[in-house]
Length: 196
Length: 196
DNA sequence: CTTTGATTTGAACGTTCGTTCAGATAAATC
DNA sequence: GATTTATCTGAACGAACGTTCAAATCAAAG
Image 1 (cartoon, chains in turn orange, purple, brown, blue):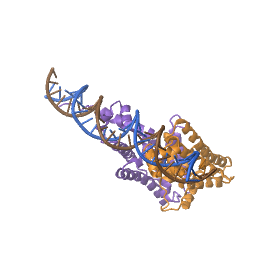
Image 2: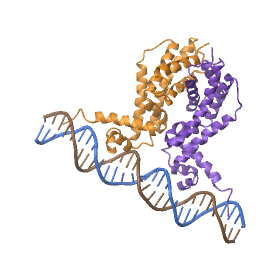
Image 3: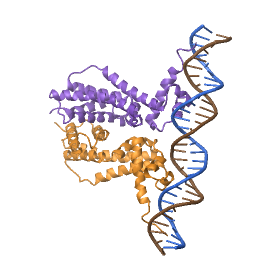
Image 4: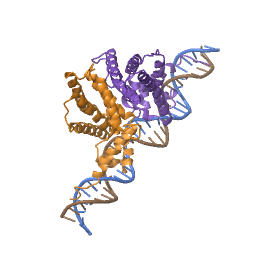
């Protein structure tokens, strides 16, 4: 027997996922052919099928991987009990994590509709888990009389939409550094929920 | 000569645009074939070319029409001088206008990348015009000492992202009526910018 | 009822799609 | 150096793609 380790798949596998992620984000799932992905990797289209059973699975794995990483990195964060501090930490975390992965964030929102129903439900559930973490912070802040929030569920959606919106215009070469943007959003979020 | 009025195009034309809008929103521009649109209209694919020179123009016309209507309806709104009242009016207007047109809003965000560069710039300019209206309200509120905003440009993007985010979860059958949602967002937006 | 021209059909075009697979290639083990 | 097997090529499959166009259809004007 031969070559049980060190085969090309260690290199090609990640390259396939990277190319697919970039192309799906730029052109959309339906507009990207397996041949385009293969060309980007430097391989023939047939070779891709050593790394994914089909195109749909490739998309799902990217979305699933993104959500898994989001929840894993978040879970590794230290727990903060003070709602005000926790909200600031969530804000900074969300902006930073998403700004680093614009392609994955983009396809996570755009290509959900291209998932088969079962896969869709799967990803949707992970997103809800993440949203629930922010909602819990808001609920705690209200219980402690620190926050003034007309509807915690809606405030959760509003804050997340606001934060994720950074990705639509942020550029590393822009007017503001990411740390400055974090600061500004922390202020706005705090003002939006704080008891006066 | 015959049939200078009342021809079928009066019926088929709008049906083509409606079908294209719905299908583009549901499945994405690239995933929707001219044959699918034709089937939805109840016509053969070739007949579509009486109503659009090509598929790309069909997408552009939908986006352009949406933005034109947004700016036109907005321009017909009475001018409000008080920044606090103007901000509330903008909030309500944005939520209501966008909630009524979820498909057009969706493709306006998702399919921008499928526009040819010239068309992209065109639509992008109209969006900036709209955003500038909110930014002007924020600037005026700051000048009058009513608002406390760390960065008006970013606050503009944040508020618009927050408001447009309603479309990702709003349903007419949901827990809250649209008027209630408007109310909640007005509160949050006001709290987020108001001088304390 | 005939004429007229807007509208639609239905077939065809060259191209590209996702996927499969027998055979070629190449690297690690013996 | 021979063997083994993961990896990749290159061709092929039927299906679907956007678009074109001659011919058929049909409703209003004369």
